[in-house]
Length: 330
Image (cartoon, rainbow, N blue to C red; front, side):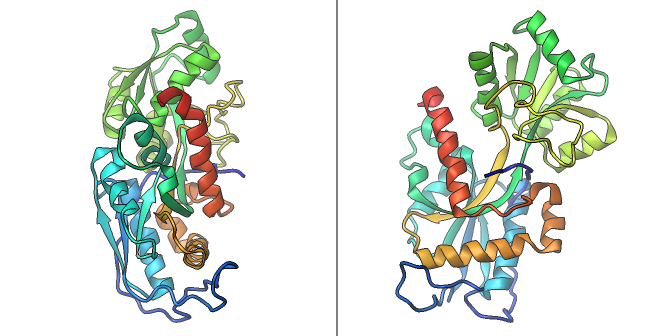
């Protein structure tokens, strides 16, 4: 399975739209179900965003939510519940009835890193994955006036002066910060991580010369800086090169095996115990939505996976993240 290009945004708006087809949205009865096609959904669906309005998670959720509403023929109400590094919203999700009427955007950060670092009362096993909505890769980038014109230049300087090169991250316990820790522990490449509160602060610091580089989610604002020349991408996080950054090598390509987890996968999930037929309906409808040109344009085509990643794929992302990070944070 390949989960590569990403997205940075995400929240859903409930628009009232009539459904022109079956009210099941194309879903079929699960193999283990009762033999009749599911009537789900028959009422409005609540979709939670574990972050504030206006960011990439908000954009993702609202865009996907509006399409689900149209396809399923029921109102989708998006609710932002920021707080506790995603713990507030996730606690609400796992406590909900597993009937398909409470869903949430989930990330490896909210479902793996936060439970490993804090006592939050839930784990990734307390949700039912549905599928991947978008994926936003990370890039190691420098400013346009940096002395490091390539990844080779950057890592040569790091090796010559261990611990003196500074790299901004969007927080101290984020995937980006932990990947830099793994870079040191597993590959003996020592940089100094400098935590900031999100992309805006990191951008200001990099352009102001306060850090040498940033390991940052390549959301639309970062892409704009790359396109303008203000940011120079040196390395990308996915296993394979990004189609929209074909000249930027990956960590894997440079010999730093396993450093592929600093991007953000935005998934859709319900509480644990979601019935198979409901999961099937949601998974199929999500795939239909992500194949729509207007949805892809709104989300950013670079953030929608070329091949749809469903429930099993999202579960694999969470499992792999836990396997790698539990020895570090557990």
